[in-house]
Image (cartoon, rainbow, N blue to C red; front, top):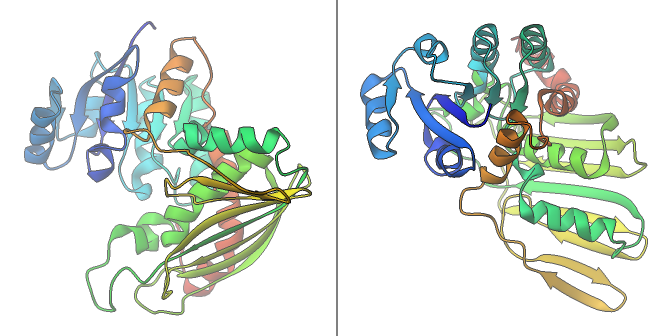
Length: 330
């Protein structure tokens, strides 16, 4: 395959700027078809983004002979179904994060792609972003000595008052949980890339704000197979907005946000340095290019179904008690 012709299932907000244009801008990549159940919205998206064809039926897009690979950008409850259907048609799949609602659904997706002999990629795009490569290079260079521990803190005010219409991100039957699953998965996955797989974890998940049925407060401790130890706090009913990853080494500390673009801060006995590390205009473009390179035999993708499975397994472990006590089964 010299050029990858993409079809997108689910052209919602994430595809407007974060991902959709990346399939058009990547080398050896074309966006040739889009699908949305609302045909009018699919047609409008195709017109605005100069996409040749649109569908209101996923199977028609999947079975389009001019679509080589499928990007699934729907909410998580349909990721497994669409991935299995695309794999059965012999099409490689790039699926939005979180990969699915549970690790069991992730395994179903992996098995389907393995059975059909097609690759499966997941949009944990921080693994390919220059900002996080800068951070990893700083850590690997020894600027803060030997890495001993890492802490993650992400908190913000409740997204909506009690009784308001609930977005799918805080409806466990659709998303698998709350904002911890949606946002916390990014941090857990990029830490897996930096420090290796998490070998053990434990924590507590609760709902304190009662604005929606999903958990809104998660605490965790975890160990990486590299020997780094970690702690995490995700609080989505908080007064202040905080977004910080703090990596503590034997000779200094590195601080960065997970979702912001401010300079990375390095503190040592010599003082503090700030390193610029902005986002690309299309945040998924670097990973999309890696996926295209993999499909065209020119490289490898750092984010696959198997790497994303590890993040899903950690989330399952941390949410197991909450899901069980609230009767959430998927």
